[in-house]
Image (tube, rainbow, N blue to C red):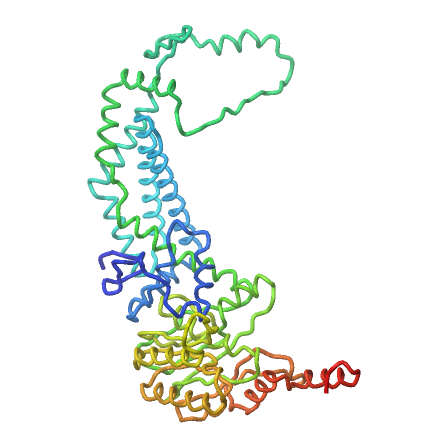
Amino acid sequence: MSFRSILFGESEVHADLDAQEAPEFFHDLNLDQVVQSITAGRNEYRLMPFFHIPLHEVQWIDYRHEVFRALEDHGLLGSVHSFAQGMRRVRAHLDQAEKLYYKHQKESWFLDAVSIYCGVLGRLATDLSAANPKSRGLRAFHEFLTNHLQSGEFKSMATDAERLKKALSGISYSIRITGKRIIVGPRGSEPDYGADVLQTFEKFKQGEVKEYEFQFPSRPDMNHVEAAILDFVAQLNPELFLSLDEYCARNAGFVDGTIVRFDREIQFYVAFLDHVERFKRTGLSFCYPTVSDQSKEIRAIETFDLALADKLSRERASVVTNDFFLKGRDRILVVSGPNQGGKTTFARTFGQIHYLASLGCPVPGSAAKLYLFDRLFTHFEREEDIHNLSGKLEDDLLRVHRILEQARSRSIIIMNESFLSTTLNDALFLSKQVMRQIMGRDILCVTVTFLDELASMSESTVSMVSTVNPEDPALRTFKVVRRPADGLAYAAAIAEKYGLTYERIKGRIGGRAKGLVAP
């Protein structure tokens, strides 16, 4: 296959890549935090847009999986790191050349950049040949790179660069300073006065002596005296410096565009692998999911919220994993249970791993089979905007309406505690109407709710419940399991809302007994 990109196929490339903004659901699913953490410290590569563009064909997800698997070879990954460091040096030399003022010095930095570039590409080609990766993308890039290095244009550029560097390093000249006058001339047969001085003082040497070495400051820019001397040296070697001028002009755009694109795009893989390695060291699993755009039978084993895991790992706290599956005509996971029991985290996890799978990335979990969606929508509770003339319920309904206008059978919808601002009966009525719309379009959905009745609406709904410690119901396990709703979730929420929990009532009774609470 001909090589164009290590990330995208012809049908997946976005011409306006850098203009891609984060999808609307990123904040709800905490994917903004995930991507921020993955790309931290790599600003020069502008990686964020790559995480804003999901793939829509299974073959290109497989293409990325192959690259990820190849880079799990530490030897090959080390080669890519060395390549990136080398390209960074090339850019630094070119940037410095642009900042310099004197012509001959600018050309020297440019020549060094070319020499580094040629060496970096040669080493990468050798390393890829030795690694012989199974990835179609890396094999295609290796073929491109080999052809590029064997082209007459590249060979001429590399050979001429080494010839010029060798010739320039072989120049010798003399400087004679008389008062304020400096005379630059060819190197003659002047005696080595340094050797004479050492010989004269050798007889005074008594055993080992302390050496006094001075480190003179080295700055890239030259002063006017140094520049003038270099100009005189150029006049003494006109043919060589003319060749240098012509070489720099001829190879001004020597960095190949495909190499530049590969240097940037390969960091998508490197950044993600570096990020997940932290979690693997704590015992958490990542896997390459089986992804289908046909079957809606999905499952995930030992999966978890990547944003929450990042936070917990920094606090050295343990991460709770969960499982889920849908089979047959199952389409909707209805998640209920007590407050602060991990329901929203479970819903975010569902969305996160499906989105990461659509990027062709490994996903949290020991095994996964996921669906390749066309659009992903979220409806999470929003704080009421005092500048919005509509009320909270109206705003919820408008957002749900917009989702249902756009959602199709290949979409995924994640809803989190919708319609909390209204009465129980109204919330149940509205939720059922929305659920009927979702079921009618055969859409995959997760809904977090206190309305247990939704879990048994039809054969396509599946009940999942966040559990508590059986010995102490006040303790959450953060495990969400597949079982019928127990009918206690909304009662607990109502009790909390109106201050009717056991602890709150007990506190008021105690306060009243002491005369601290008005009857």
